[in-house]
Length: 135
Image (cartoon, rainbow, N blue to C red):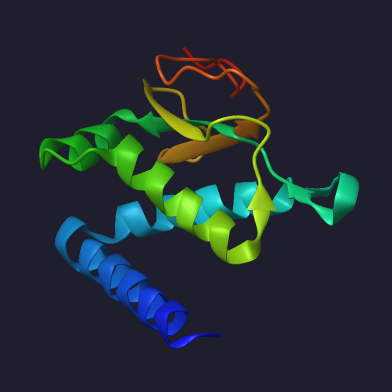
């Protein structure tokens, strides 16, 4: 790894640690769930490319949604940026522009969040239901 790549990775790690400290543990757990969803749906494509879903729907329980948005954070943008960095590090390719859409749901199974990923070539961040029962 080049010196520039090492520096970039160190800065990303510091940024993630800072976000965890400032915004709480919930955001870090949510990010981990999003990255697991991305990794679990990676498939080998043509010319040795590894393709991953580009559209993710994150349904947040009412309390979690309130906590994450209360601080004025742009949760969707933070998650999208983190997902893009993760994909770049792993060498993943997208079938279309990557986006994370945040929704609020009162019936999230684990009481916190639900993450679902899928392929949408011409995705619009304005909304799309991927999760069962997502609105």
